Image (cartoon, rainbow, N blue to C red; front, side, top):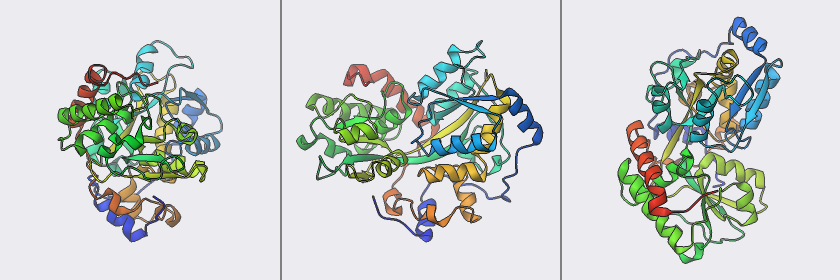
Length: 372
């Protein structure tokens, strides 16, 4: 997907999405000096599961550190999945050391349960009103940060013809080629990949999509097409996983990083186009609660939101900032073509939860592959 779109096409793209938000007066005020002072006094922020090539997190973290030089950013397990993040909170409830995360970036389906379990604490950023209501907890326990759609990343040196549908992955030409980015028993990204596969088979989002997604991957595993390896840019380039199902923003960033060596194509399937929202939250046991709040203020500021867009992730405040002309045109021109997203489905929290349950509980029995 090397085509660029115009600003007008970008607006058309936005209109196809289910994230609709009222547009009050835009304001991206600097955090209070009291918060900055309190966070600086704590001196550290511990994050988890933030690969530098995911949503441009490398630059986002670097810019936060440059802006708040008195705060060290301690990065735990960049390749962790959502379930790993929550387990890190549970395992460190009484620990104020370097292994206790202050903040988490979760798949939307995990957030309500985490809040009910008491793992999260509420906080509303200054730009709260510009986060769409349907992707945030009314009490501030979690809030959408960015979104994208499930797609295929393909090594074109090894595969001259890229799959365009989930059903294509069953073809003999893709033997030993198909991978996920995580373990479907714990990774939100992998779980949503199976949901996308299930919907492509005519399933409704929820238990049915989970069941049909499992069926497809059982077929791929039996045929020898599924590779139980964590797919990344490196495994695509090395030929270990010539096809990886992942969020479009990850794949586009990997494509850019590979810079044609090998050439990599990013394909949004023609059916089963699932849009996924991730959310931010602060640990209920955060050792550095003020640094955590300052991090949230930065992420939801104009600068932080633009940082995510540079990594091909549509930030939560996208609609409001676009209307106000706050994004550089060069970034808007790099968005994928609007028509690829016209069939995008934004599942409800309830559907996500039912889909996750079906996959987590059924993976071992139905597919039986140990992804690692």
